[in-house]
Amino acid sequence: MRPEQKFKAGGVEATVWKNKSQKDGGESEYFSVGFTRSYKDKGGSWKTTNSLAVHDIPKAIAVLGKAYEWCVMKRKDDGQAAEA
Image 1 (cartoon, rainbow, N blue to C red):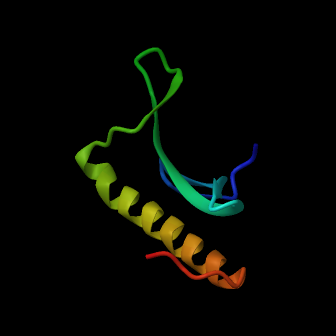
Image 2: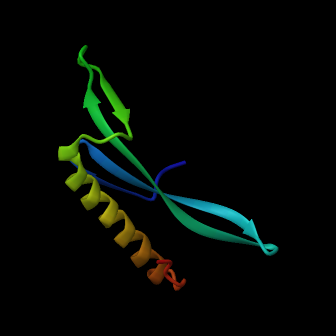
Image 3: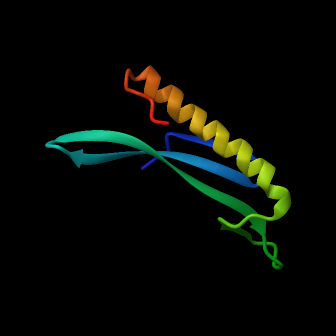
């Protein structure tokens, strides 16, 4: 399964996923957002985590804001009510 969209600032990334659920006898779609930070360990290998250093917080705010904006605008484009 491929993500719908990704937003990245430095090593901080927000990934938007489309999900489906069964509700009231019908199927509905909604978005969820995953969040990671990439870094190199002492051996030089790339790793990911969902923990942030203090200097990563502004990057996280930026990518999560973009992900939220994308989700809201996509819902409007699809003719569905935007979720706040």
